[in-house]
Length: 128
Ligand code: SF4
Image 1 (cartoon, rainbow, N blue to C red):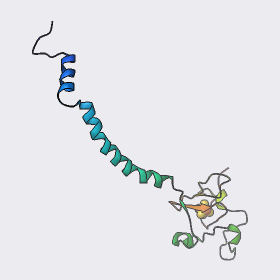
Image 2: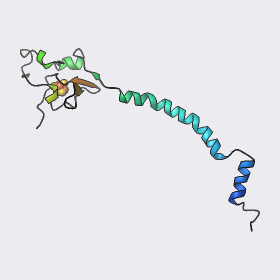
Image 3: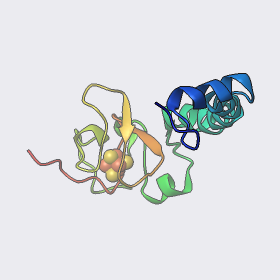
Image 4: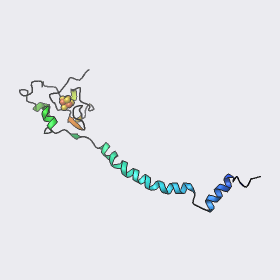
C-alpha cells in the first residue's frame, strides 16, 4: 500500500526517466569540460616537474662567485688554496646526486645540477 503524498523510489525513478534527463547524465556532461580543463592545467606542470634540472654553467654568476668548475681537475690550486686533489662534488656534503650519476643537485644551487666531477670553494667533506 502506497500513500499518494510520499512517492516511492520506483515512482521517482520513473519520473526522471520519463521527463527530464537523469541527474547523473547531466553531471557527467558537466564533468567533461571540467576534467578537460583540469588536464590542461595539470599537464604542463607535470611535464615541467619531470624535466631534469639544467646543469650549472661555470659562467653562472653564482658559480663564478664560488669558483665552480665542472671538472675539478681543471681547478687552479694557486687561485683556490682550499682545493685538494680528490675533492669533487660527488664527495661533498652538499651534493645531493645519486652515486654513480654524472650530475646531481647541490644545496647551494637550487634548480640546477652540478657535475659529480665538479668542485667549488664551498666544498665540505661528506660525513662517513
Ligand atoms: S658545494 Fe659541493 S656539491 Fe655544491 S658545487 Fe660546491 S663542491 Fe660541488
